Amino acid sequence: MSIISQPYLVPQTIIKANLYKVDQSSHKSFITKAVEKTGSSVVTIESQRYVKKRKFPSNSQLFFDPSLKKFFGLDLPNDNQPRIEQSQGSGFIFADGLVLTNAHVINKSNKVIVGLTNGKKYIGKLIGQDFFTDLAVLKIEGKGPWPKAKLGDSTKIKVGDWAIAVGNPFGLENTVTLGIISNLKRNVTQLGIYDKKLELIQTDAAINPGNSGGPLLNSNGEVIGINTLIRSGPGAGLSFAIPINKAKEIAYQLINNGKVIHPMIGISLINESIIETNTNSVKVGYVVPNSPADKSGIMVNDIIIKVGNKEIKSASDVTSEISKNGINKKIKILLKRKNKFVILKVIPTDITNLEK
Image (cartoon, rainbow, N blue to C red; front, side):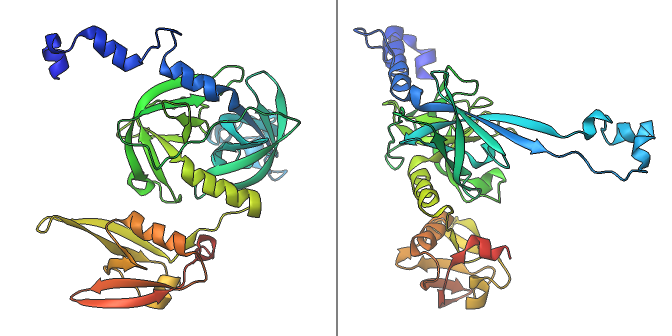
């Protein structure tokens, strides 16, 4: 506000110079340079899904009653024919012929086409996808060499750093938006998303339609995240990206195993602030029946003090330590139950086993 109300304190020329960081020798901003480093590795993902015709009884009154046809949104007989549904997103080449994108971009696709910025198109073969982290790896069926993105380190980014969202939704040309990193380790449950296992980078760099799956770059043109979703409800205008370090870990498992193991014990967690002591605690909000947590004796309202050797300050600490521990291996958990301390040993299992 001081810049606006007292402009004489900071010359406007300095403000503009700092904002755009234009290199006078090349007349290129840091944004242009960053996109030039990685832009050619950004690809269009075109997915095609074969939809079979709807099945109705041969004597169905839906065929004869116009009011019912209108109510059910039917346009027979054309709507009853097999058809191909197409959708589009973005991705980027991170290794030799391998593309990272969002799982929801290629979900239930029968055919995937990968388009490069030079106009060439190739068939994309699905290596693996993980819906809990919304990530997928494709293999381009063709001969390289391929333009590869330079991957950064998402543990080094800080709130206030530049964020450049890049996509290639229509092929041939990149679309670019600029913002800053607004928040780190944003838990998706705070966004009303309960079927994913993610901590996201929050940015105000707009993710345009079709840019989902594209890279989020730092000011040096390194990939620090994968654009994944936009907040459309309260707080609209916020965008989110999967940290690249997490994406690399998931991609490695998909390439080597075709799937991802997510160690879980079967509890939901609640972060609580204690005003009197100005501290935080993590409370068990729900225990999945017959889960490892249930079998070990963990109860609702237990306060988690330690997992392994890690003192717990947030729910993300719990999930991180359980993930590091892996499955089928005991981990010690220290709890506070009312006024007593309880030590339990729990054996995490893969999240898919909790759904059975």
